[in-house]
Length: 115
Length: 113
Image 1 (tube, helix red, strand yellow):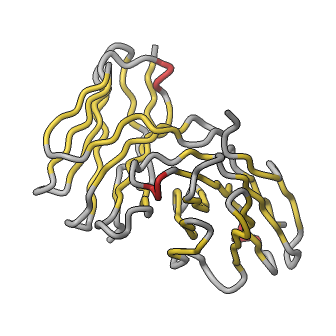
Image 2 (spheres, rainbow over the protein chains, first blue to last red):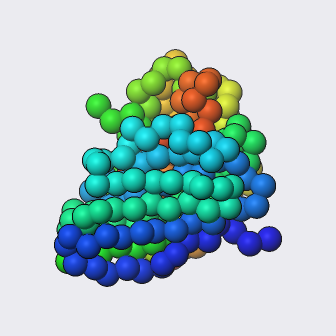
Image 3 (tube, chains in turn brown, orange):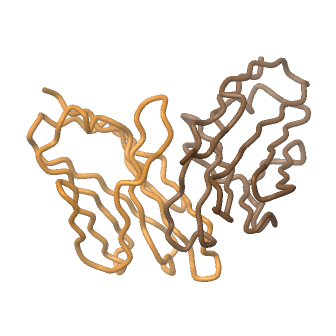
């Protein structure tokens, strides 16, 4: 079975540009998570969805960040406008059964560099 | 105070030794606890989870949980160079918040041949 698929794998952009990261969860998984990882702050939860509905977005750093899940097989994380401090690896993860098992299945990540 | 705390390391052990990784958490109502391993440049992968006080063993790995002390640990016996990675402790919050998994900063383990 295919795992969690993220795109792009690498993105280099200039400050002020819009960035859109994409995620396709594992089929049948109904919870989806967006995490950001940096050396300084580790792996931070940004937002998570259950059944396509955002449940907790308290980790979204500011209004420049937005996330959507229009259907069970696709989610986006958008940063507009981007800033150098947004440079990080962004992971998408999914889990079945509303996260009861606790195991997150991670994508390979999208490495974002904002110049 | 961070919700989940780990020493960043690096923790260096010789091949064949026992590596002991520790984690503390702040929410006394936390329900379940996980250890993930992350190789450099890769995504995290689950090693073990534990829900009840005490020890849980899986091969060379043992997870230990002490809810009274808000402490969870991971022991790796007979450490191998292939165990060299960052180990992330993760905690799941209270019932009703079943999907939210909070990670510590991670401890880097180096196993020297």
